[in-house]
Each structure stands twice: as structure tokens, then as C-alpha cells.
Length: 270
Picture 1 (cartoon, one colour):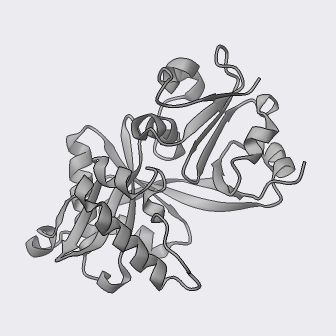
Picture 2: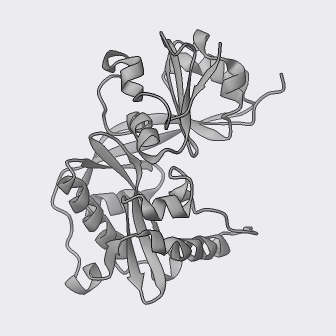
């Protein structure tokens, strides 16, 4: 029997599955269950709430698979296509039978470990935490990003807010920092995934304000705040995204491993 368990009405996910099944949290996709609980966005599916053998956690475009593929309902899996799956290799046959396309790509996981390149005091002074009142500024930030993208027609929520459920939730969530130049939100860094022990950062900058060290200044603020909360800052970027990896290096992050992620969808007709 399929059971969908909303994150705001059930016991903590680790209590339901046990630490021995999910394993210790480490940088990367394992932050996803804790982030769903923290953000109240997304959810999970288990084959049996009393004795779970298979697990699907979803939030924004992220999906995490765990357990026995034979116990996972393919119809449930099909509803969560058009997303990127973090899954052990033994799930690949099931993913291949469920979706018309399955594209692997390599993601580099980093951990904050070294002294970052400094920024000027004037630049750092433009950075502050986002607040609920900054929602309209995030809306404008997304519209400008969409306007600079080739072939874009309309602006929805910026991708950086997808794991929070939108701009209002991100601005009021307490895990986002921005560089403000007058009325403009020029750059924003957020906890894309916030776990029990780690905070995985995502960064976006308005194209008009690049190469001003604004993103680096935001990352400085985010890493300091994470450390103050007892969280280890992490960074995940596609291996092909040299700009993101260069910014991570400048901010004191160092690569610790590579992981394969699978972009899936749409679902095959059943």
C-alpha cells in the first residue's frame, strides 16, 4: 500500500526509519530529509509506515531514493519525474523502466575547510540576511534573471527558491543572505538544503552586478552564520560549472567527492 507522509504531521523521518537505515548525514543529498522537515516543503513516500523498506523523499526538483526498489510503487515514482534523482545504482533499472529519458551528470560536493579570499569592507557592508519583507525584491530578482535568459517568456520563482516553496518562504526562512545595492537585490546565497549538521549553499547573482565580489561577500556571511549555528557549510556544483567551482574555491571550499545524479522524465505511458 502506498503511503504519502506529509512532513508537518508525522514524527521525524529519522525516527520512522532509524539512523541505521538512512545512515549518518554527510554533505550532499542526504540533507534532503532533514530539509523537508525544516522547510515544511516537499514530502516523502514509504511502502509501509510501520516497517519501511523503500523511501522516496522529494523537495523542489530534488529526489532521494533509499531502500529496496522492488518495494517502490512505480506509479508514485512516475509522478515525480522532471527532476533529478539521487539514487544508488540498484535503482537504475526501475528508473529506466519508469522514465523515457534518464541523463546522468556528475556533481562535485565541497566542504568549507580553508580561509576564504577576503573582500573589501565596503563590499561586505552591502550584505545582510534576507527578511520576509524582501519577497518583492526576490520577485524582481527572478524577473531580471528570466529576462536575461535566452528564450524566456515569463518569470516564476527563481530556481534558488525551489527547495523552499517560493520567494516568500525563502525570504522568511532565516537561511538566505543578499547583497543590496540601493533598491536592487544584486546577489543572493541561501541554504538550498539545510540538514541537521550541514548547510548546502546555492548562489545566484544578477548578471548586471557580476565580477564585483558580491556573491563572495554573501558566501562569507552565510558560512559565518552556519558555523555560528553549529552547521558545516557545504557546496554542490556540476563538474561542468567552472564558475561555481571557482567561486567555491575562492570562498574556502574544497572538493571531497563526486556523485552521479540522474535527471529523469517524462514518465513512460503505462
